[in-house]
Image (cartoon, rainbow, N blue to C red):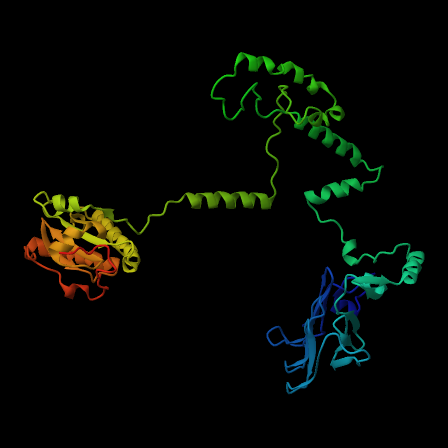
Length: 485
């Protein structure tokens, strides 16, 4: 015959000590949620409403920090790490203080419906949830100190920086407890965490009758055998990784000990006699050619290990992906090359040369150069898409300002950056109002069209001051480029 569950069993789902689980209202709404922590509880009490309209009536963590609220949602009791405060239903603070509370201070009680909270200090907070005739549970939600005693409890005074201890209390405790030390806190009873670090401690505490002793002994024997395996050959001189530059002299080879002297049949020794072999030979690796161990294959991998391996392979594949940069460095060009290949008769036909005069010491040039590299990339990308298009007929070069005295003198400017565009040896455009890569591309294509139409500047053209509206002038006392005429 199946016994019908009681009303309390239907509403309460807590473990034996009530430190983990839930309580629900008869309306099937969540009432209390309790979570067990290493040093205390985390508890939350909800109002009897659905999940959309439910409000938190009380919550406390394992440090005793939290509080209780009125049904309208306004705070009633608030407890922090430093102090507390109590408010009325309108939100006005009626009491507040800092820890520790004065001795003899009355407890603060907050009660509404099935919930009652009694607060003394952060270490003494009780929470009671009671539905009359159905369920009643009480929890201590204050902070649980790991140690409740201190060595300072035995101090009666100090003299010259030294503490004076109460010898009578110490001897009385030693007679009653058997130790003068402070008792261990709850954290000392935590079991060992799983992992390789706790394996030695777990094996050391095995009882003598445990059947694992034989397995541990076999593993230790295998470890001793593996330590004797030579993974790298040991030559008579030099090292196995870096061969010596020259062979040793005959006298040096005669002074070396023979290899047979260190190759006593250690591979035939039992494992318990070979464990200390490394220290007996001064830490020198055995020269015996150990037999190859059988291949046992790959170990089985867990689901987590397989996921990590697949993640690593995908990351390696992503790292191997090549990304195309959106900048192209400007090719440098010397002043001699400018005279011979750009301004001279040997200049290419139907091609535009854009000379960008830059100075490393100028902050405007340093800020502008990445934009010019982006513009050069746009031109190169356009040339790849349409090899017969205008972008394929444009070349952009970088000319160092310290090597541009000839250009400054010929065209009458003393400021950087400066853009000079030549078509078939003739100057087509001169400007310094280019600030982005798109503007560089548009200016070069426009200058190419002007050159094709024959719209070039006169040979005696001077840039003058109108071309330097966005730049600082280079004065004789601040520029290394200035030369006296």
